[in-house]
Image (tube, rainbow over the protein chains, first blue to last red):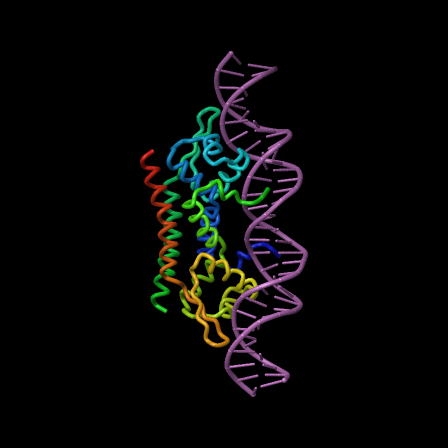
Length: 109
Length: 109
DNA sequence: ACGTGATATTGCAATATCACAATGATAAAT
DNA sequence: ATTTATCATTGTGATATTGCAATATCACGT
């Protein structure tokens, strides 16, 4: 077994879980914060600011990219990252919706 | 290695990640929703509503309990679960703070 | 073309997570 | 007391994640 039985759950539930899963690691939280504080920073800066290795950072960047929170800016050999604010808002909306609905349900029942 | 290097990150980052990590599984999202819609439901109802086995549900309940979102109500042989609204709000606040701060930082830089 | 710097990919080891069968514990019902 | 119902715990196998060393790629400058 060991795999997630996603088919048992609906799209909305999977969507919330997909977003929060990516946020569920302190390195990725730190990276998102660093990028937001240093717009157009590159991979090396993240390596330095987190203390993780370059391959590890690259892998985490891939996860963050998967949920669309990352924008990439190619300038020659350099790759500058920034946060996609629209997607961040969408993510925030989805997660917040979950909280709001849960709260409302609690108060009803 | 394969373990999470939590000591590299600060308390605030770990706190956000701890909350979102628990929310990062569709079964737990579905369970929280079900409990919120059916106040004081028991374990069996969750087993039926999700299609997962009782031990699996019990394990997920443990994870949700760890971040304090669960209240338990013992009535004889029955154990009724409900959502701790205060803790849900605290969780929501912490996660939302992360989004807000990230957004503000993006707009500054 | 060659070296350099930046990032991605691959391969691997360690650990964590997911899911369930089996078992244990407890309290009501018979 | 025995059964039944409910939930937790333990043990397991399977899969996923984390992290890094080694390597590959790619764009620039020389």
